[in-house]
Each structure stands twice: as structure tokens, then as C-alpha cells.
Length: 430
Image (cartoon, rainbow, N blue to C red; front, side):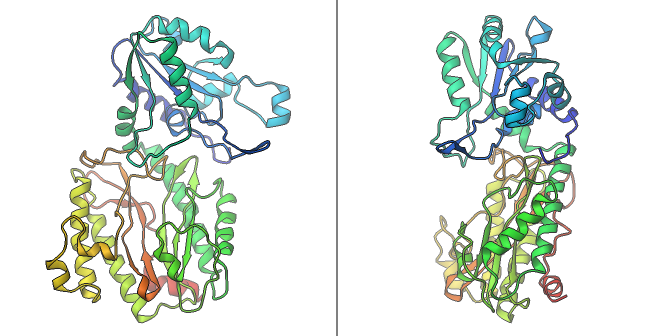
């Protein structure tokens, strides 16, 4: 791994919090992700399943975590099952976790090799009544691929049909949405790396550069700062490309007079950051571009103030819609008749700002969190309003990541990343 070791007390605490919400005489199982094939002998880079990472810190394939807090054998209350490593594997694939290294990483003393899994599982399954399975119930989930977790769940339910089944996901949705200080520091690291990359491209962009060249500059900065890369597929959208919300081709030349909308950010230790900025290709906003830009910035600043404990996500978006409506009226993009005659299910402002303003962020870019429950301190949200005007070849989005505080305004993890139009112009022309 490129990132620095993480203190195992984070994972010990996470397991303790999860176990506290398990039913009596119950067992929970968490699997790593597969390494997914491309073709022939090619594979995609490994990405660990965020739940087993959250609970153990283990960041390698073919790993299984078992939690059984009421087990009569104290050795089996927390167990890791790992792919056995040896000198041959070390030569061909690189070093894998030894049992000692797994303990250092996770704080789990009982570590077995995977070949012992079925024997140990039979023993502990005869001692429990309920088994927690780990299903993906995120509100954005749309998964067609059968995962390693899915296959294991099928095997477990088929082999032990008499056990009651419970779901891990509702517990994890609540736990993962509220961040530990160590997690917030890891996310701050991701934001700091993102800042370095953004400042780098401010000095690089000029008329005639290509979107993919900018992507390369950012990736260079990410890698040299211990990130494995972008936290999500990068959007570097110049000119009218900015009006395609998920434009990812990044294959166009940046033209004098256009803007570039960046939605690009680094990961660090599997934690995400999520940044949007919009800069002028030639280093100078036009009067119209700056007017729209500052309108988006005002909405972002005011929307941020609304992210406080007790806020309901849906109500928050209604209030942000009012802020945006006011700005669109001021820009002449809407008139009073548009607002008076609007469809309540698709308000007038949605013509120019059609996406949501905030989502949870953490181990996943669109992180766990139950949107119908009130916001809490130490949840981390994006704030990302935008105005999109295809008729003018103009799209502007601004986005920061903020931590909800017990009182007062959220703490901006991206507070050092340039956002004021004048500062961006100054840096681009330095």
C-alpha cells in the first residue's frame, strides 16, 4: 500500500461499535472483494470492499472477517481468514499479510489461513442462532456483477438453512456515516493531496492544452503524494462539455475564452475526497462568467451553513432550491412567472441546476448514510451547487467537503483550496 499505516485502534473501535448492535448469539461475516478480470490474464486493479476494511484495516484479496461476540471460545470472538502467504507468492505477487502483520493492522489476535475456514465455520455456526450477511443496500447501488460476498452468502445460507438471517448493512449505514477523528484526518490527507494537484494545474492550464493532459498532471501529483489515484472517474470538462454532468471522456482541447469544470479529487488510504472547481482557460473570467460563478459560490456558502445537526436531507435541498432560485432570478435566467407557474415536483430552478447539492462522503465517494435520519456531528458531506447554461456554452460547479460540527458552521476540509474567482485569476497569471 502507498499510504502510511493506520492506527489499529480505529478498527478495534469500529468493531466494538458494530458488535454492540448485534443480536445475542449472533455471528457476522465480511468478505473482501474479488480481483475482477478484464480479458485473457488481465485484471482490474484490486479495490478492497469498504466494509471489511472499515472493520479490520485488511486491504488485500481473499480475506474474511468473522465476528461472534458471544462465542464460548474467546479465541473465536474475532477471527480473520487470510490467503496463506509463502516465499513463492512473495516472489510472484509481492508480500501478503502474515498472521503477525494482520494482528498489527487489525488488532485481531486470531488469524487463520483460508483452508481452515469451513472447519472453523462449522464449529462456530453450531454455537450461534443468527448470522449477519452483508448486502449492498446503498440508495445508489445498481450492481449486476455477483460479488465474492454474494457467493459466500449463497454458500452460507445453503449449508446452514436453519439459522436466522440478519442484515449488517443497516448497522453499517449508521456507523460509517459518523466519522472517527482518525477517519477525518485521513480524509483531510486526501483533500490536501487534491489541493496540491489543483494548484499544479492552475499553473499548467492555458489555451490549447488538452483535457487529458490536465488529467495526467493531476494523476502525477496524486501518485507522488501516496494516493493511488482519483477517488472516482475524473471529470475535466471544457466549454460545453461542462453541461454533461458525468462527462468523463476528457479528450477535447481547451479553447481560449472557455471555462473548464473540474470534478476531480484524490483518494488516500481508501478514503475519498470530492472537489469541483471551474476555471478560465485563459486565466481571466469574462464579466458574464464571473457573475454566474459568484452566484454559484454564494449558494455554496449559504448551503454550507445549513449543514448542522438535526437537519433532514430532503428539507435541506428544498432550502437550497430557494437560494438557487433567487440567484437565477438575479442572473435573468428565470423570471417571476417561471417561479409562480413552476411544477412543485420539478421546480423552475431545476432547468439550470438539476442535481442534488450534498451527499455523504467517506470510504465511498457516495458514502453510507440514511438520508431520512437527521444529520449528526462528524458526518462529512459534499456541498456542490452548479449552474448549467448550454445555450451559452457555460457550466459552473463548485464543491467542497465539510464536517458537521456540534455547533456552528461545518469545518471545511478544503478550506485551503482556492475558490474565489480573483484568487484563481491571480494564481493562473502569476
